[in-house]
Length: 309
Length: 294
Image (tube, rainbow over all chains, first blue to last red; front, side, top):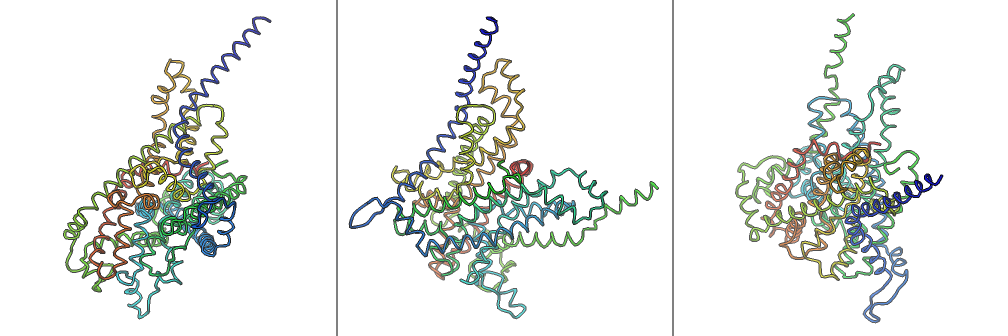
């Protein structure tokens, strides 16, 4: 009895000591990242929130404004127009991107020739290109001065579309972003398809399933976690749209104003108008909107097995 | 019977996917057109560029050498400096981010410490914070600290890579067995030694992936250096080409000799990445997909 009690005490003591050790070593590993995380993520967010609660005027200097800046932002046509644009753009872009990358992944899963392997690599290649250069290359292709569109359509006696004009710029940008990211998403989906056990197809075929049934009932169903991952990446990326419109802005005279997307508007407020309080407000509001959208989406898809469950 | 089976097997292997191959060929053309345009047009001088030669084919005289000379001498050889800056930012930021991610990802996966669950939830939340929403607040913070317009203003923010920690953690949980770590500990190896000798070799695939992704991310970065830097000698190549492009656009016809340099500059800036991706295929292919294979 006594022996077992002392034994228990000893184990507890040892456990406490190992716990303390585990704690210390665990924190030693996580600590360096934790410091960077605090300094470069938590601190800027808190600082932006702080700045967004103040206003600077010539008359009164810097004064506490409460949520006035937010009320202003959500009543500011420039900001709202930008938010509406990125939402509209996401709603069109993401389904197109997902369907294209899914279709390519399914084709590549089916065809196993040397040309298929080559295509896989070439379709992925745009991912390795800086978005700035990607946007610039397409900007050149769209351009009246050096692009082939006018030549190609001219050969049929038609005037080509001007993808840099105010009416068409939406489609011009849609094409740039699809080109840049479809290959990356395709690689993710392709790898997930390759991970599926082929005996499943065999079993389905024996049960009399057609090729389309195998695609829809097995392949696409098992791809759900990968599709959710892609959707989240695409959503986060598109809502913070900046690089492509910023670069194409110069080539498309007048089609892309400075308040085209929320991020461009925040940039203009910070650098052209030196209004750091309002610019912080927009950054914070944008970050919060993206975070909430994605978070809600993750919660909604949790049961289907997304990548964070 | 056997013969018909072989017959059928052979029939199956026959390339009956002709329509699918045609679709693939069309896709390859679409995805390669911008590259083709840049390769062709960086060979032209400004006269040929604007002078109505076919946009998708070479002009009679090929001007690569002349354009190369101009590219690397324009503005006192600024372009070479931009390339070097890009390399510095990409490697310093990429390597730093990878080291931090590997340490933290391993720590989260293999130690139970106070605050681990909460810390990991916060990390998952951080994956969803849009990186660009941090740029302007970080810029304002850095400008108060007098850090803007230095190399640190670009390198420090790229050290933050929550997704990298997430990937390493996911990988370490599955592929570094606790038994192996315990065995090393029983043999008297300290925690750090165990990590270096046992865990690191097992983590190699995910380390290469995180490194590649972080290097590419910083090489491609535009918004952050655009906000942080004023001195054009500190620019990475993305911001530099953006600057030339806006100069050329603003001055219209007077800037036309700049266009050949911009086009060749774009081509030169993407070559290192294309080579890296093609030669490191073996590594990234496994790693890019870690998060999607549940």
